[in-house]
Image (cartoon, rainbow, N blue to C red; front, side):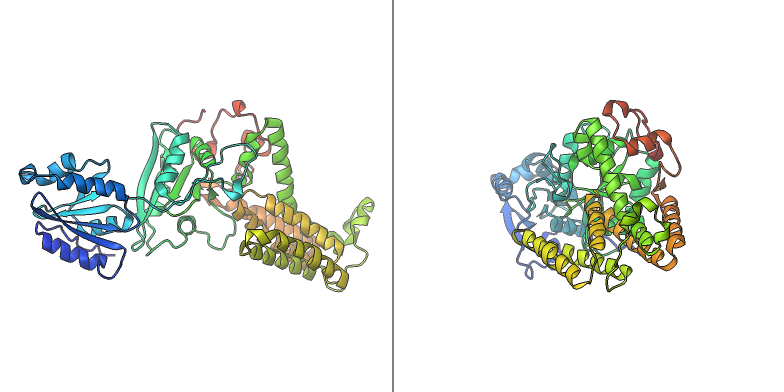
Length: 486
C-alpha cells in the first residue's frame, strides 16, 4: 500500500485553517469546535472536540495567553509558547496537518499560530468514564474491588499502581486507518522474553483494517489466527491485580482504548482455569477450590457423553452402577433430548443477558420450575438428562474464563455427536483428537497444553495444586523469562 504524501503545516494561518476546517468538517459536525482568537496581536485558531476537552484547563490556558504582549512572542515564537507561556504538562508540536487532525479527533487541542509552521498539540483531554468497579465475571470474596475501565490512561495507571518496577514498559501503538484506536503493549523489560514482545508488537503492527469495532476481540482475531478453533489463545481479565500477576511472570499485556478487558498473552490451556479467589485464601483452601473447579470443568466436558455412552450401551456399565442406567429413555432419543436442552440453556443464557437485572431471577425461576418440570411431565425429557445437563451447566459456569466455557460447550456437543455415531470408539477417538488438537496449538510459540504436553513435573504440580506463594520461586520456564527466579 502506497504511503500518502504528508500535508505540511504552512506559516500562513489562512491556508492551515482552510485545510483543517474542511478535513475536520467544522461546519458539518456540531461537536468539532474552531475558536478564532487573537493573542499578543497575533491571529491564532484552536481546534477541539466538545466533550473531550477539560474546560477548566482550556480556560486557564486561554487566560494565560490573553495576557501576552507582542514583544513576548518576538523571535522564536514556537519555542516561547511551548516552553514558557503554555503552562501544561503534555504539550508537543507537529509539522504534519493530517497528524494534527488525527490528534484532535483523539482528544487533544490543536493551536495554530499565524507565522509558525508548526501546530501545537495540548493534551488537555478527558473522556466520559465510569468508576473502576469490581468486574462482574471475576468477583472475589476478599481482595481489591477496582477493575479496568474503558479509558486507556486509567487502565495503565491501575497497572502501574501495582507494579512500580522501573523496567515496566507501556509502548503506545495505533491501529485502524479510520478508528486510529490507541493500544498499549505492556511488559516488564527485565523479565519478558524480547522475542515474544517483538512477535506481539509485529502482529499488532501488521493489522490492516479501517477500525476496531469490537476493540480487544478484533485485536485477538487478527493476532492469534485459528479462526475456526473455539479455544482462546489469549486470556482476558478485567482485574488489575490479575494483569500485574501475569506481568510479573513474564507475560505481555495488550490494553485497548475503549475496552475494560486486557489481553494477556501468551497463555496455556491451564491459565484459563485459574482464578484470583484461589490465591486470596490459605494454600490448602486454595488447593481445594482449584480441585473442585477442575472437577467441575472436566465434568462439564466429559460427563454427558460418558453417561450417554453407558446409557445406550449398558453392558459397559459396572454391575454396581447399573442403577445409573435409565429404565425408560422417554419418547425422544437421548441424543435429541441432550441437544434440545443444550439449545434451551443457550437460549436462557442469551435471554438473561438481554433481561433487566430486576427480572433475571424471575426468568430463572420460570425456566427451572415451569419449562423443566413440564418438559419432564409431557415426556420430552427424562429426569436423568435434566440432572446431568444441570451438572454440566454448573461446570460451565464454574469455568473462570468465559471464552473457555463457550469452547468447552461446543466440544461437549462434538463429543456427544461422535459418541452417538460410533459409541465407545467414537468417544475414545473424539477424546484423543481433542488432546491432539490441544497439544498442537501454540500461543506465540508457547505450547498450549504445557506443562501436560510437553510434560514438566514441577510446573504440572503447580497447575494441579495451588502451591504456597513462598514456594513458587521460579517463573514459568515455557515463556523464557529473562529473570527466571522470583
